[in-house]
Image 1 (tube, rainbow, N blue to C red):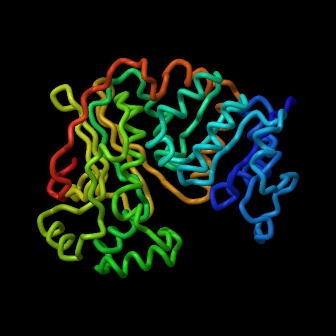
Image 2 (image 1 turned 45 degrees about the horizontal axis):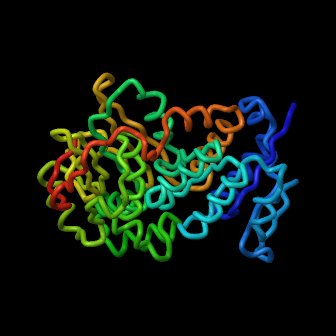
Length: 355
């Protein structure tokens, strides 16, 4: 069987999961991709750092140029996060004629047009399933499963850290600070959780979903957002007494020809499906004009759920599906039909109910 070589940039939590899948499930992945996928290089920041797993056959290096300049490498997998360095690496990889797989929501939310213009110029694919829903395959669902529909609205829980904190406050009666500390102890929250709890991470993901569902080139700054960091236990107690729970929701809907967007703590009826999403889980409710109401649910973060989405993208690239999708759907294109005009959805206060 023929082989394709991959360069992995970043060997942190998700990168380690990707390397584990590629090495431990090589035969299964080869059957589904049609070629064997060889993780030839893994680029890390610190070569001296001890790594728990043994990545047999993977050459660990600290120079990304060796990956970019290697003619054998057909696909670069960017998993370092952040924006500036990731943007440079992705653009250089595309210019070198390599396909790209990324889980980087901030990169796409802020630089989607530039990244995909470079991909079109090089006739290469950028696959990004893990960027919006982690292990929840919402990108494929919107591009393929729901392609016959005009999406009317999205309501989504897209940040497992916030959902875990709100679950602990609701069901265990924890104060916000205690629930955050608990999330950090369990590894659900970073030492600096600001981008999660202030709604920025959710806004990044909503910007990507707005492109997929509505063709809207939306940046994070276009989305009014409010996080959970100002919620008090009393807020959730009062909501429960009224028959609601509070979730941090990303919301997008077509309203009178415009697109309404927001990220905010939102009142959700306790018998609604989104209210039943607990702990570090994510869920996306998408309403299409033909299919009606759909719900996608699963783990939105973590080593193996996110690695599952990344390796799924690798299989799509190797099988040739990703480049066809890129050519046809023309993501973040300046030549695409104009999207609905974006409207700021007013106050981002927790005053809206979601079914």
